[in-house]
Image (spheres, rainbow, N blue to C red):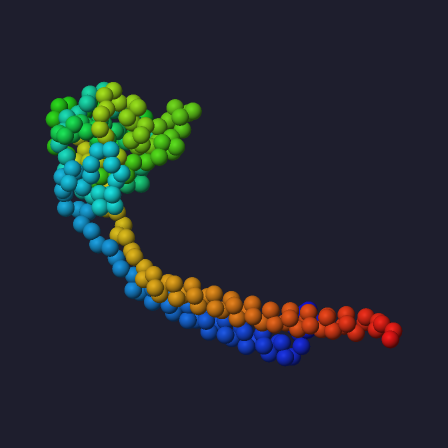
Length: 246
């Protein structure tokens, strides 16, 4: 078949197919650039504090509007439910995070990252009683990040914390990283979430379509060469078949 493909006629056809494919690729690139240029940045206010209960509810999956939102919450600390999460960072510095159990004014449990300490420093004396907090509401992590065999807890996983806390009824699915750490702890670096970007899907679809057209041009050349090869093979086979005597 490649002997046929090297004939001048089919070499010219291949060059034509490659030219068409290149033109389609250029059109696809243009459509892709248009899709990126026309992308819409989804702006949402994550820095103006709002009450936690206005954007999230206990026992409910965190919404995109609540994720990364700066919120306010009031409640009471549960003494003895503090947890240390190791192997963390804050502003590029390694250390441990201290997690506390807050029962909000509506009776739901909320995990609160109250601050950052040097590795192995332990938990300092923390204030008890009622608290009024401001912080960033963040999605829970997966408990699989922890190394339980080594006795290390590395994830802030609400599903794990509720098994460690003594008294839990309703629980928020995310955790709060407070803006102001209590004495003895350093503040956690909790940057705002990145803005979501929505691509122009119509232009993106056209870009994919042009790429498929370019591939089809080359495939069509290969299919025509193969058809020519099969036609010549059939003619040779017919010519080599002895004719039956009359």
